[in-house]
Structures are given as structure tokens and as C-alpha cells.
Length: 265
Ligand code: ADP
Image (cartoon, rainbow, N blue to C red; front, top):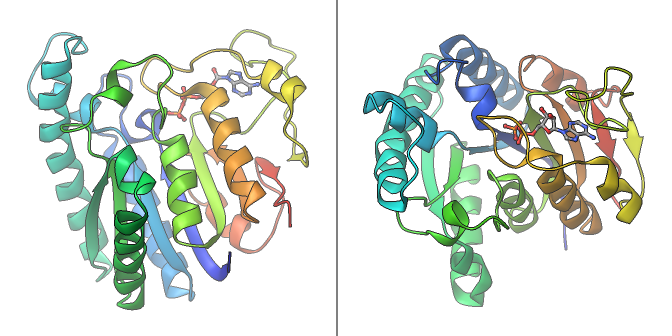
């Protein structure tokens, strides 16, 4: 697979896009958007993979608790996706950037013809300087929302699939934590950040623990799966804290930040 040197896929999770009350984290989103716009101005091509539709939708619908039934989750996703895109369009608009929405299901990537069309769409958008914003099509697909063994796990896997499809050079996964630790830092105060991982194997998965935060859902396990998939295709993967979008400048400059999963070739 060819790699486009200045092409970066950035994945942002629910825990970065919403605050503790489940409302949109406007300051965080603004900072992220400004940084991405600036990085694009520096000559990079950006694809954003963004979750958060269900949480934002549930909040906008004034649901008293996280929706549990499939139909309510899908309804919340439809409302929240709209709200998220409205905010992205507005914030990116400040910097004179055009965004595009791409909603995907697992089978869009499994069928060769659909996959090729999709790759061509990304290429056409990026060629035009447009920033594609990708999410899973939660209102249509249900396997991922419902099943425990989620295929895309809060979009971590989706971001790896998109990075491969776009032949990106880097995938940056913005999490609610500074990177990958030798054990779950929420459970162990003495957990140490691992700054570089060259090989992902069973022993690495053992460090990852179960699903993650209340608002995020994937945890580190799905990030490892994503890193495994993408690094095998020659894409470097970085996991770093979404609270500090400025770290993306360091990523561009090749400075040490978060955890780097080194590309295999
Ligand atoms: P996001 O919205 O960023 O995807 P998640 O909640 O899905 O957030 O995943 C991040 C969480 O994974 C962390 O907050 C942490 O509690 C948990 N976790 C489990 N094991 C580890 C580990 N080894 N290193 C870092 N975080 C871990």
C-alpha cells in the first residue's frame, strides 16, 4: 500500500467531545478544530474520525439517563450526529475550512466495490482541501452499538480502517488519558506511561484491561487492536490525551508525545 506522507487521521472519542454532564465540550472542540485547521494550513491533509453522537444526542433530547434500547440509541445517534456536524461546520468555518460528513458501516468496507468508491470519495475531498469527518452510521448499523465485542469499539477500529483506506501516514487517537500505560492508571496509581511500542502481542493486550471510561466505551483494548491493524500497514499510531490538542503539533514535528506504536515498515 502507498503512504501519503502528509496525510493524518485523527480520532476523537466521546470522552473528549463531551464533558462530565454529557454536554458538548465546546472549548475542547474549538481547540481541536483550531489545531486541525492550523495543521492543514501547514500543508497536511486531515481526516477526522469523531464519535460522540449518542452521548450528545441523548443530552439534546433531555434523556434522564444513557439510552439503553437499540431504538433510543439510534434515535439519539441521529440527533447527536446532526449537532456534532453543526458544531464542526461552525468551528471549522471560522478558519475558512470546509468539512464533509462520511457515515460508514462495516459492510461498506468489506465489499470491494464500495470500498473503492469510498477511497475515491476521500481522495476527491482531500484533493479539494476539504476535511472529511467520519463516524459510524449508528442509526443504521446495530451490531456495533449492541454487541459487546464491538467491531469498531467507539470508533478506534473505524479510525484504523479509515487510515488504511486513505493510505495515511499517521493515525492519532485522542483519548481521555495521556497514552498507553503498563496497567490501567485509573486502578493503579503507580502505572507508568509507555512511550513507544514496537510489537503488540498477547502480553500487551494483558496490560489493557477491559472497557474504558463511562462516556468512552472502547478502552485501551480497542486502541491496541486499531494500532495492531494500522501499524501492520505501515501507519504509525499515536495515542495521546484529547485534553491537549496542541500535542498534535508535536506529532507533526516528530516529537515524543503520548504512546507511539511504531509502523511495521
Ligand atoms: P476514549 O473515549 O478516549 O476512547 P476510553 O474510555 O474508551 O476513552 O479508553 C480510555 C480508558 O482506558 C482510560 O481512561 C483507562 O481507564 C482505560 N485503560 C485500561 N487499561 C489502560 C492502560 N493500560 N493504559 C491506559 N488506559 C487504560
